[in-house]
Image 1 (cartoon, helix red, strand yellow):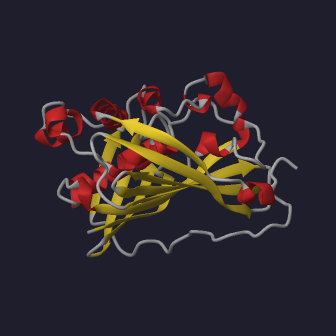
Image 2 (cartoon, helix red, strand yellow):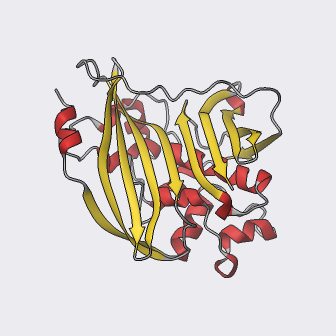
Image 3 (tube, one colour):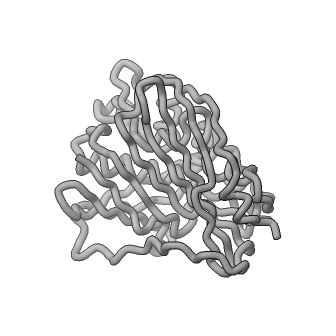
Length: 286
C-alpha cells in the first residue's frame, strides 16, 4: 500500500532554514493580483518596498515555496503519483506579524492521516520560528485520490453551516491569464499549474491555478474590504478547497461579518455559474 499511516505519523520532524526579503514579498503579492491600479496608495502597501506590509498568507510560500503539498509527499510512509494529488485545505495561524525580511527555522511533520474511503488525507504541519520565538504555523491538508480504504480513522469533516443571510460585502477579482505562471515563481512548481499535458494526465482540460493563490486573493479581499487594510489584524485563516480555478477567470468573493473577530468567506468562479472554489472559510482577527 503506498500510504503507510503508522510510518508517516512516526517519522521524525524535518527542519530547514528559510529566509525571505522584500523582493520575495513583492513577488508573492503580485502573484495574487496586487498592484492594480499600480499607483493606488492602498496597492502600493503591497508592492513598493518603502511602504511594504506583508499579507499573512505570504507565510505559505516564505523561504521559496509552500512547505505543504510537494514536501509532504517525500515523508516516510508516503509514496504516491503526483498526478493523483490535490491540495484539500489550508490553515494558517500567525503568532505575530510576518516581517518584511527574515530568517527562521521551519519544522514539518505529518500530524494526521485520515482514511476517507476513496482517498487518504495527510495533514502536514509546519511550525516556523525565528530567534525571537514562534512566527506562524501552517496545516496543509493533502488529498490523495485512490489511496484510502485501509480502515483508518476518517477524521473530522471540517464542514461548517452555511452563513446566514446576505453577505455584508461582495467583491470580484479578475485573474490574469498568466496568473499561475506568475504565482509559481514564489516556489510552487507543481506542473499541474503550468504544463497542459500534465494537467490532462491529472484529469483537467488545462492547467489550474494554485489553491494557495486563490487563498491569498481571498485574504487580501478581506483585509482590504473589512479590516481597513491592516494586515496585522489577521491571526487565523482556514479554508477548504472546494473546486478548481482556471487562470483568466473572475472570482466572486462573498464576505459575512460573523462576529467582532471573525469573517466568513465564500469564493466562486463567476464564469462557471458561481461554481464554489473556497468553502468553509474563516478569517479570525483582532
